[in-house]
Length: 98
Image (cartoon, rainbow, N blue to C red; front, side, top):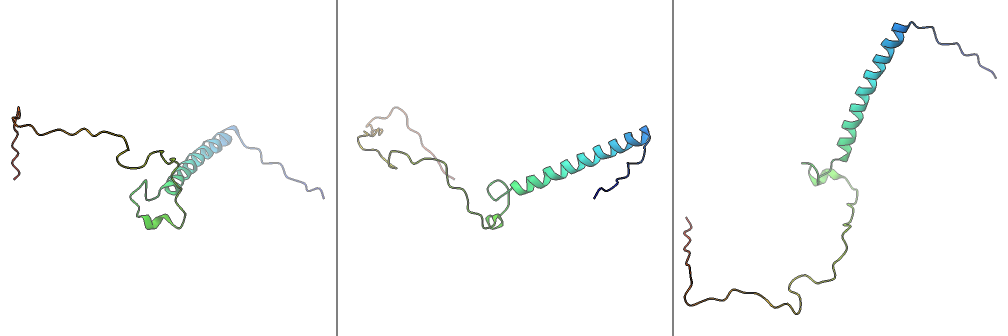
């Protein structure tokens, strides 16, 4: 089963250059289109103005942060630092709220 293939037609040098320039333009347009489509795919509600309902049914990735060693809030053994009221303050500040 040997198929005979016909050789491509002979093109002039100018025709080849025109074809190359046309193909470069097509490649540039397709690259730009691919980039814009990849940008659309990458958007979700956390990095754009889209509503969360448009994210689809994919499960969001869990946080990569590890749980800390300490509990939330005041830690045992920590002595607090509170400003004490004095009888004769050095400065007095009065605030008026309108």
